[in-house]
Image (cartoon, rainbow, N blue to C red; front, side, top):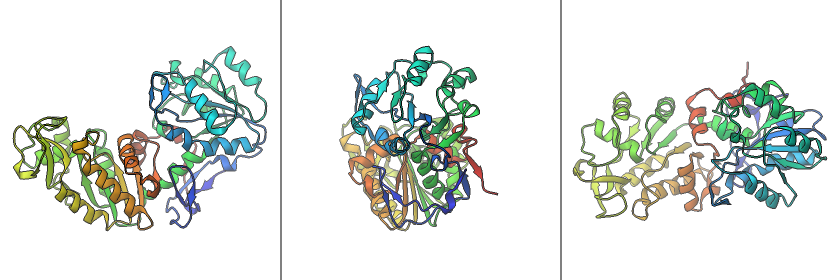
Length: 413
């Protein structure tokens, strides 16, 4: 079965997974196969693909936001006495600490097995009783995962009765556990992935005016998004190193700031678009980690200057547009916010987006660094949707192929 998410009553969703009431229904015209609609779910064995790729240091979890976001789907399945086989990828590390942390959050035993396929995994899966959880080792220890290998996908599928994808952050990847596996099991969308789609579809069909805020470093990764959003945006506010390329393309000096010739070629086709708003001043220094920090107008940047943040006049200008928005999407910091001297522009935008999102506009924030900056302000709960996907969010809003959503999301005829 499928749910028409255009008619969903989904309310505002906080980063903790709770729902607020009273937000506008999504104007999306899509249908989605939600696990809520799966028939005969009781006592089934479920292969649950999550994205618990959290930051780690010395086998310790630095931040568990993604794990917390995945709890509603897990609890939903446990209410139906499902046997859960949970799998994720993780950057060059064992998922054992993830399994342990999940057990703490659920206040429930979570068994870990140090493999993701093979005889030992099959035996452990077969021993599962109703309501029990088996957490697999990092999927990417098997070369078949990133190759979308059918044999590996079959091995994973053989462990369960049905498949649930709750890993939005990898839905743009053509990997075995998000793509090929759907050929061998009945497949559904988890509660987190369902919310990602519902909320991002509100950016695709926004309540106008839409204000898009795009920052970060790499123009190449965001050019498709910029072109797509420009068609629907009232204004697009550019920051970070992306702005340097626009500024340089207009013939202004950018000194020793980050730019690249490939990006400038892309920008050349966009620079005269009246919807694009660029910084009018900047915080600059002669050293990336400090040095002499000064504010300069864009037409006063020197050859030795490094642009590292938007300036106060730009913040005021951007605020004037954000305050007009009925829909806001933000991806990418406004500067080198990790440094104390250059964080103010990014944090100011974060506060502005959160303040406007609090009942006045529908706001979406995504991307690892962007979410990190938002959390510093302690205002993340005011934003309607904080996406768990960086590259996946860019791909989805850009209209790129999403292998993880194939057969799970279809056009409403």
